[in-house]
Image 1 (cartoon, one colour):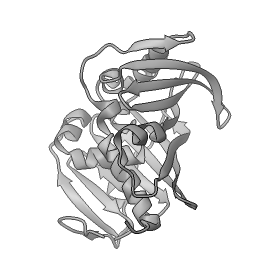
Image 2 (tube, one colour):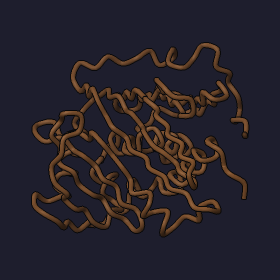
Image 3 (spheres, one colour):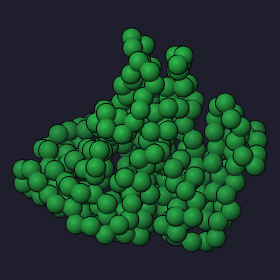
Image 4 (cartoon, helix red, strand yellow):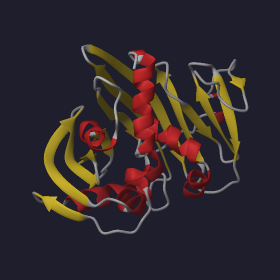
Length: 268
């Protein structure tokens, strides 16, 4: 097999993430056990879910950083997004910096998914339904949002706790740590071959500030990497949370004016 090259590396990694995208968000009723040092790890996540459930709208900046290494060749990438959500059915995740990440705009009547590399977007018609029903019927849009920030569908769900913990087998309390100066509790969510570390702020506004999957563990157990081996890392760091007096954007103006509407995206 030939060397994948930087675009191939990123595409292969995104393929792995899409394959595991439903791991955290599958809505199957189970009772995750909690282990590790107190406080209870499940309680940390449930407090976050209870808090975001009562938010009518929010805005937050998301920085995705990662790397893919094959042999001695290591490719690093960074993408920055701005994420808006207004219940029951308005959402935008727009790329601010970077070249390969998707943007998604959902105004309650249709969703537009944009790829900057080809300057094209597709339109997905939608009835005026809530987020849960829309994501269930439009998996492509949900998977695009997983790559922007994997907790997005859970944060805007009518039942965030079920969406976050419904398929998790175990939660572990790791300890306390700061993320960009914010004191957080770090917890680990486990299901099968995949672990997710989530940092949740302490205090009256428990919000997620960082999410990092253990891709090394996942790939070792489930993925057949390219010949010669490959190592990958990916983490999402959040900043500038706004949950009060949030001004919704002009959804019609969020994508580039010269973007071309297509029926489906080009390959390659």
